[in-house]
Amino acid sequence: MTAETEDPFRVLIGTILSQRTRDEMTEVASRQLFAKYGTPQALARARVDDVERLIRPVGFYRQKARKLREVSRVLLDRHGGRVPATYEELIELPQVGPKTANCVLVYGYGLQALPIDTHCHRIPNRLGLVRTRTPEETERALGRIVPREYWLWVNEWFVRFGKEVCRPIGPRCDVCTFTSFCAYYRQRGKR
Image 1 (tube, rainbow, N blue to C red):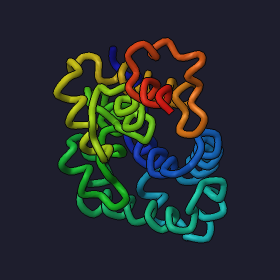
Image 2: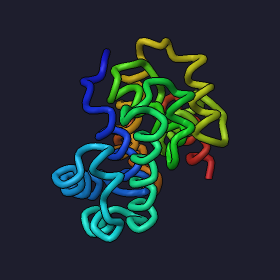
Image 3: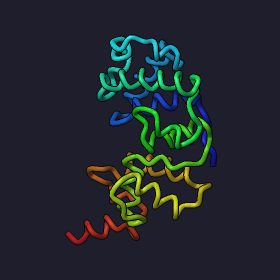
Image 4: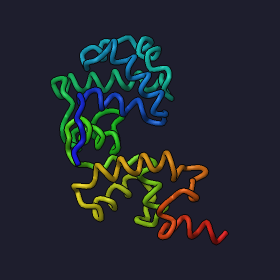
């Protein structure tokens, strides 16, 4: 399975906007922002208050507005306005952590990577597939047990499953097909 690729700049900025924000709000803010500032050049020159107004639907919009301008300036100054295509270079950008870097690699460049968000960290731990404390540890653990060609599928499945069934609060174990081997379900049943 390969991802449909999008403009790496839009993936980068959209993923930064999505941090600690619901998908619906990210989509609204991204659409508004890219309608006016669709390139690193335009966003680097934007007024912070204008960016704040456009991305207000997302959480921490004031901080993100400043970081979006900063990352755009870094792209211009260090990368000729292009988004890097390696994990090592991406992780050096402001506001870019492992999940954001991997999202850019997958959705911006079509490369195999494991973008581990809260769902992708919670679910394999609940199922008992891994025993990790952080998303970064989960990324490494899954990378060892999941064949590379399935990484994108695993990520997309965990995200969907985490929103619909294995929710952070009030997991819907009654409709889950994995209860027969789920460590969380077995432990929960002992209470």
